Image (cartoon, rainbow, N blue to C red):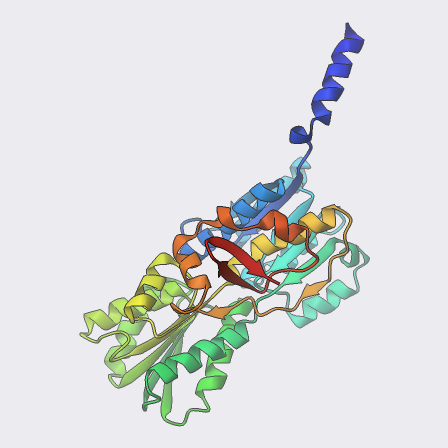
Amino acid sequence: MRLHSLLCLLCLFSLPGLAQYTSVLFLNPGKAQESFWSDVDHFATEAAKQLHIDLDIVHGEREEYALVNHLQKLIARKQLPDYMIVVNEKQVLPRLMTLLEGHPVYIVIILNDLDQSERTKVKLSAHWEEFLLTTLIPDNYRIGQQTAKEMVLAGGQQAGDLLVLSGDKLTPASIQRTQGALDYLKHNTQLTLKQVVYTDWNEQQAYNKTLRLLKRFPQSRYIWAVNDHSALGAIKALNEMGLRPGQDVHIATVNSSAEIIKRREQGEISSLGAGHFALAGWALLLIDQHSKGLSIPKRINRPFFELINEENPIYQCLIDKDWSRFPFRQLAAQDSLPTNFQLNKQRLTASP
């Protein structure tokens, strides 16, 4: 009887549908209800579903040490996953990596990289030589330049004052995206940069600060905003001042929330960049390949951003957000990541 039970048990665990999934923990530094981080979650969740990956997502709620505390608890309980997807939001990643050193957990860094000094330390570590799987960092500097350029062109390159709403002073995406915009804008002698302020990626802060700046600089004709929440706060302030977004004042920003795409369609946003929300999903593709014994490059050098307008194939995808049509299984069989989205008839595909 015991032998019969054991054989049944072995058969049960050998069934294909009950095979043990690769476990992945995504330490998401944002809030679950934030438009960008929600898009990141949904895209990654669909990728995990199709790739048969056991994905757990934990949100830091913009409190970076909440993720440190969560990781400490997992280590104490010996409940670490096979892989982790991590983000260097507000320079928290070195602390996470210090905690993980010595534990057999592969990590993929997305969105915000280590700074150069931390990179140098990692290169000297035998542990991270093995367990730092790869890095997927979007070209924030380039999209900062591109959105700034498109905004100025939309404004007919007319003279006027410029306001810049950055994110924070620590996060690499904020620093690089803002620097890209400033480097482009400083070559336009018809523009006068009045002030750079920090919104902490927050709509209310952006609204409060933009309102004060508009009263101080009534000749403002351009606002570059680091993300959609900051842009929406600026729009609210412009409306309160009786100014028309997209006509009296041109706005550039980044991200792909439903609200900001609607504003782009209505002309209130003059320039919009997006696409980097897919990086956790791309990370899962690489993890899937690595778990099958395939070699993974240490760094993926791609822009991961596109300018978004009605002519761009990604535009309707971002409106629908039906990622169940996305062919993750097909991509998993390929030896490369997609660079952009395309619509082929009624089927969503990705082009390598």
